Image (spheres, rainbow, N blue to C red):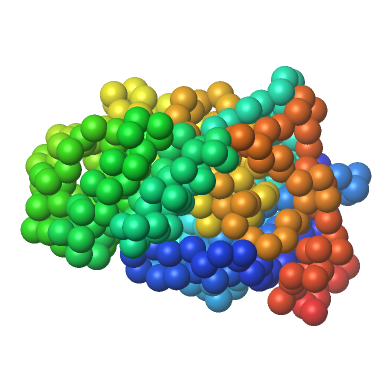
Length: 363
């Protein structure tokens, strides 16, 4: 079946609360949304949120990548189009993933079909930095049903260590803690922080040092009192294998948007387990579309709290039948398939390009 039409949407979604990571503060998400149609009128959707500072990609570069690939895909058969895009994944993994997942949805990929109800626990970002505010936020998050708290570190190791101790004291076994440095530490401070951790109630310590600083991350992992998880360092199966050879790395996190499609994501998750590590899945800065796809994969592959919670952060949703959040978990009924709210999509679109057999336009 040939590809009849691809429409690209550059979207801006304002967040209800600023989202803080070590290298920036997000006030909005700006994903690329891909809509693909075949000659029978069927359609599929994909999302790729390029996060400046998280990846080597840029939003403008990803947009041009999508435009080029979409133009070349028109009229091609699905397997040929996917193979052509997959060959270019290293150029722009997030943009390529948006295109490939739209085609996978269009083909009715079996992982996206829910034959039974699904309830998947999510983690929640933890915002308090003032020690006096920490007990109240822990109480509030636990009351919402969350059992895993994501605490950002990576600035001043001594202050971070003191904050972690305060969260541990407030949680008192009611919630697990994931620490995430977002590459904020150098080797020395990362080791000092990791050695100072009391492992009680801490599940893992994520990405201590820069993405390419494999030796530094290895040193921190070897020194850490809790298992280290790599995230920003991981783009492909080769990176997963490299992580598997590092002492102290017990977890690897994958994101659909970095792996190049649903099938490649499943391959990565399986490899993590084969190498004796534990997979974690999810992107906290994606909107509903990518979070839904990651949740569909997670129901078969993940046994810990999902990080596909980005859909909870924007003020608005893109689905007319939104994902349901209740008691700390994402819930989907059997047979659930999302429906894009085209009015909402239009309201949040800041750029658009359409590619078809008879037209190429931008508006």
